[in-house]
Image (cartoon, rainbow, N blue to C red):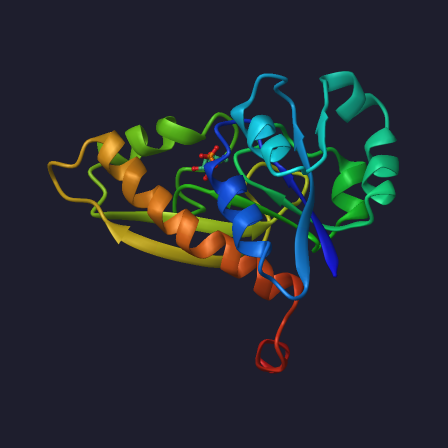
Length: 195
Ligand code: GAR
């Protein structure tokens, strides 16, 4: 069984989908939820499900490597960033190279980078009059949203869609694909390995 840590700062709807989907998985479980916001609803979601939580502040995350000890303590083999907005420091990128992925609510490389998160992304997509948007799941490197892309899924943007409408469509894609893709990355089938 591979243990997954989910890092999240927001409502945690994706974290919840991942936790619940992997609860049935033969090979992966969410073992830890990490947040930089003590009041983040994602922490309550985790506690309700008896999943350990860790709140980090900037000094802990950037000026020490103590997080690695906690990840080792929980035997974390893979990390999913699901609405975690801090840049990941080099020590953590190195320790989880190709074992840490991020979910982004647009079709990277468009609409990515520092400051591009949540509704800001959907507002920019709307302002540009894009006919479609979607989600990107990519490996994490030391720069915002620039790691190698693993998966994208698309949805149309109608001319009268508001940013909130776009957000709903994108969130539906996230909930559908992210938990399943994580399971495939963590426990590849023989077909995945051959591909
Ligand atoms: C998700 O839409 C995710 O793609 C986005 O934050 C949201 C978290 O939602 N991430 C970024 O924008 C990263 N740049 P949730 O808290 O409901 O899971």
